[in-house]
Length: 490
Image 1 (cartoon, rainbow, N blue to C red):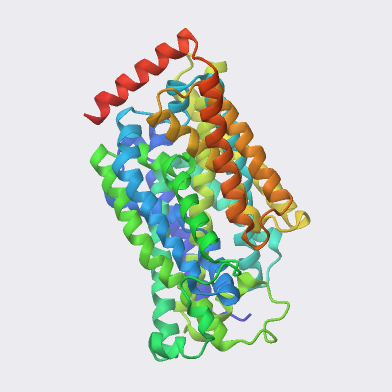
Image 2 (cartoon, rainbow, N blue to C red; image 1 turned 120 degrees about the vertical axis):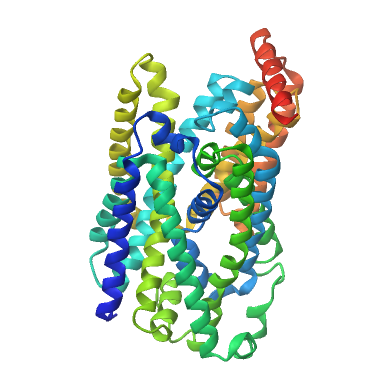
């Protein structure tokens, strides 16, 4: 694929700009809170942008067009995730922010005990470092290497180093500001892409007239891989993503005030809707432009870029490539920072208490380097595993849904105890893993895996808590927790 010089210039300028923003923002990082929660000083627009940038990964930019080409426009229902933003803004984020948490894992010790907190921290660290950081770096590098005809390992290293640099120096302060710039680039890329693609076909009416009717069905039948079971599963998976994950909610903890956290989430949800619509347009256009014979053997993730390279003029194409880079970096940096914050705050400070603030800040930075190296190693292994990129959603269904169940039960059902929470997490994760590994549910495998992990966690948590009693220490901790929640919500 031959790129115009202007496209390469735009791409390089954007990379350098991201580094400059990170360097500039790192000047304001002098203590641990600046690094982990940006000094709790993020405003609503930066907050919305960093939420949005974290949410829209490389899979959003290039994976969805391939899905639309093969299964149809029903992929757009992913925009229903905006409902999770609303729920997070109205119910959950105010609680987290007012309780002054540094990591999301803290709530599990306040409500249950240290074992639940540690188990969830370990799950998040593994999932964020390997699944979200390593696989995202790999997925982005695949596309960039195909576009620029450069060895994939070179792009894995480039993206990892770029991501690590601004995370190392500025923590969430740098991540949030670079995310804001990257989110703007994603918007520009998708907006110009949609305008030029629709213009090529004479608008939506002209485009939809050139594709089979089943491609534009919003809700295909159950025999489709993106039928209503898939739509329900994707909607449900948005709730742990926006409500309980350290990966995303670390930003809510960094808001200036509770109201800023609310408005940032609501604005992020609002912006997600048009982005979800713009993402599917190139997939429909590809169905009009290419027959299955034309793209036989083509990586499905290349379908969107193929459309854009044929339609977008030089310069605008460079913006799109920069948007793809931004999509990968904005997800990877969030995962890297999430894992390092959890390791230092949940484990290191307990083994080495009483050290200076600067010491913990230094350890956090070194941890990002170690985790980045582990993520790169995983990214280099991914091609040998087969289907690892496609497993991202399954991993979320397996690991995140039980955690979401446990936090909801903990907030709204007083009887739930620590043993019930442990059984919910362990059995829910096992059930989801079994469903995924053995391909239960067939074409609706994602929906089945999501249901298996969620229902098992819910039943296990309720059942075990009803046949066991809280210890005196646990009862005291639970009472104190609900007293704090009561004061927060008044």
